[in-house]
Image (cartoon, rainbow over all chains, first blue to last red; front, side):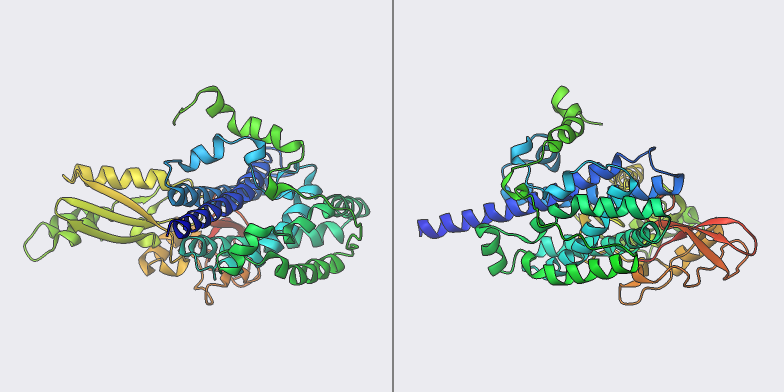
Length: 260
Length: 175
């Protein structure tokens, strides 16, 4: 009986960690997008990027708040966001990369939007009701995000020589971070088998097909570089995450417990 | 309908306390679009009464909508002014909000305010409707409009312009 109880606890902790990892993906990317506030190429794009940022930050709030509740140790969504250091963050590396120029931002966004539409469609089927409910909200937003980022890829790729070269370079630069989107460890595999987590490796074929068809239409080459970088879900990050968290967490670190 | 008169009406015999609460909450509006109430927007999901405790259930439009905390505070304040001290505002996640829950009255108020109301969704997949599906200009009624940007002043709106009267306008996008 004890071992059964321990097993349930272990599983509960796995679900908490899973929700936190999904929140980390959303928060780091949302924070990156928010860096475009007042810096975008023109006003409408400034509004668009920051609105997309809000959708991601809202998602992070929902995932963290669920994780805190499920954990039952009294952590709020703010505690989870503000009081963990790099090695405790579990986001996929692609989400933490710096915004670069507009091409870098849109290339990354498009690749993640395609991934998110596939991911949240599946997460809606999760046997975990809260994760499924968050997914049902997120999928609507991600479809809309994709519609916009897809248009930008086509405009930039099939635009001027300069825009074509820069968006192509952006895809080449980020490509090695996409493999990690489709890799899972043993614990996630066990959550997949229980119908809780999304089978990410199974999303890859559709993702590749969709990305390739848009890149073709945009007169861009699908990168074929074999290099890849991984480690986000294990807490092994690029140097960029530390700088991101330094800004994101400054207020709570300097003035613990500060509220609006 | 005049909200104040409506509230006075509900004080008469024949009205339930829930109806009185509904009338009171009709005064709580979206801080970004002060002409539509939370009921008209479809984010007011439930009102229940247990002894002196009022529980109001709302849902978010978009995940990161920054208006939610203001709306929560407005609900409390409105009910407190009417004498309800024990008010709990709960947030429900599921089912996910859709613009299909917006009332006919809400749509009409949006139009009068200069915002094109959302179209009815096609099984929740309307975010995929390609831009160019006729969004009617709230100023002159023309169907010759074009999308300037997928996002307007808030996450729930896109920016359009009318090709006939040349006015730019917000379109409350349909999700």
